[in-house]
Image (cartoon, rainbow, N blue to C red; front, side, top):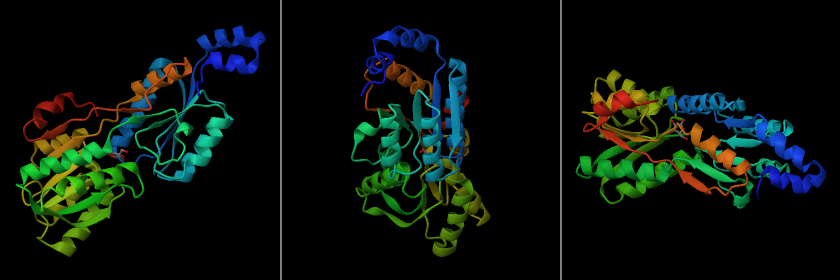
Length: 316
Ligand code: AHR
């Protein structure tokens, strides 16, 4: 389905076509953004990118913080439909349970752009496109790096992200597949820290209590949980990065700094600064142009070979 003003002309009739076209040209775009919450530094950087770029382009952005609850995000999308926004951006907390509200947006002829996290649906026409990182690739990169850096040996504890979310599901699956190539790399425990620093610290404390010195590696689904785990490891009198190796995902400034300091061994990037790409895509959709169904951001990897040099240029 195309969402251009030209499309609306056919619906509304030729008499008001010229008026629609001229007002569309100078109308301020009204966009609703249903964000998951503010669980991590990554999330804050993503919200800031969306807000700053909207301001730069003179877009009227209706921002809603879902506070980690899917029902809040569904309510926000419904309110955007009522407000007759030009487009809806949804960063879905979890993968499932979106079809009904997306159907309502489609019925209202409001294009929906899914960002950051993918959804599971039987009807891909319910959203126009997806923009974000390839979480599966990130998990694979973390596993490959670890396999090489450890000589394929070690007992791993995993700090998972939010249960049911695409990054937790994909990073978990890809990592497990990646380390399967190394029979002596084993996940001995795995729990959710909900992508939060306090969650990572709490779960790591429990892992240390349960497994004592039998932990060689932490695989954290994000930097915030890795940084929380570092606090727990240091409190237990151990040296993060040396006694226990740490691999995580995001590459927030603090994460890359921890790599430069030797406390984290490797971070895989997950770039949150895609506000400009989202608005370029929305403008293209509203101009009636075709856009790719899935556009993945390119992510890098930082370890002791490149972290310090990369720090001055990190933007989040
Ligand atoms: O969906 C992206 C993930 O969500 C980031 O890795 C994490 O930090 C955030 O909370």
